[in-house]
Image (tube, rainbow over all chains, first blue to last red; front, side, top):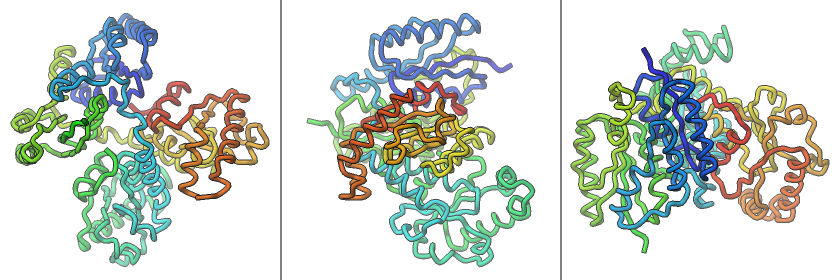
Length: 273
Length: 273
């Protein structure tokens, strides 16, 4: 029987780090989770409220909640520990060994992991995102000279979300181009892509899944038929192989996995860390 | 003097968790970092290569690199530990206490933190992103009835990246609407927003920063002048206050912080965890 548990992610800022930590561990277990994120817990009053919420859950469910905390301030953490929960303290666990190794004390400044940092990096991020939006879906191909990568694939393979993720997470300039029926029948690389051959990265997908996705958008259309999807995918993959364009099958991997695969295999240089 | 260090983020999958956790610790120190991410280190051959790279850096720089690892497989981790580095093992540190608390062994399946999960959640994510793109910059206002939130602000306050981030990270349906000169002079909520008043969330910004951002796009224009920016910001904030629209100043906070603030203060319901 699958265990049910409530898990709290508690942070003095966004909670993103606490969630990331917790998720990476919790995916290792077969659990039914009730998830609660408490961001901006940066003083003892808010810590006290969090403890009350934790204790209510413990009483109501009869199971000790799990708490993943990235809270930096010692007095806030001390309060949180008093809750009736199993407490995983990310900051406390790692900061002391890191201080010892570096030979300096940490600043104990409230979590800056997802803070603004400097304006220059913010501008890179926004600029990369605007590039992705302005060069989405082949609407404009004459900026490909400024692209780090141009993602190529048939309609609905996930080109747009991957392009945007590459921009927001890594500051990479990604354009994307949808292979049309005309391109696929021609069987050669469209003219506008030829001079950017070394920047191209293909996305493919299983025809079954592609049909499913297209049916959502245009039910019972030729566009969404299995036959059409199968033909398009086969021709696109044929093109990738003939033209030596690296490609990845997006069917069962996440946007994050596609993006990091493209960076890794394409040896792209990130602007953001 | 600022210390220089090389830090390796090593993962059997994307490296995103290792980077997120490492960054949140390293922002606590004044360090000059050389950062290297080694994703997809899922067998001992790749681990061996990683160790060679680590040792080369140790020799070349004369300083022990820091390694943040989320690798799940024990044999791969054992190899990695042999590198001449200070090793922070996120998996090993927390998985045993978690196994004890839950009373079951973990699956030791390779990192699924950014894995695909089920297709339904993938679809929610893509759907939310398409919503953000289709309802960006006020291009279409008649879908606001389906929005979880409509972000409002003058041009270049960060509405688009925040809308997209809300979609990708949290599955939230966010439209956004730019307040025009006409709206600002009128001083009342534009007609198309009135019936969605309770979904509105404002973005503001310091006029100095807004001028900087607009100068990048249209140097020496009226649009980018300090006077114009100051007027627009003052009128927008006046409108937010009169209409009791909650708002946040985006000047010195990140996209992530703006997004989580909107969720937290607006009590939005996330579709993704």
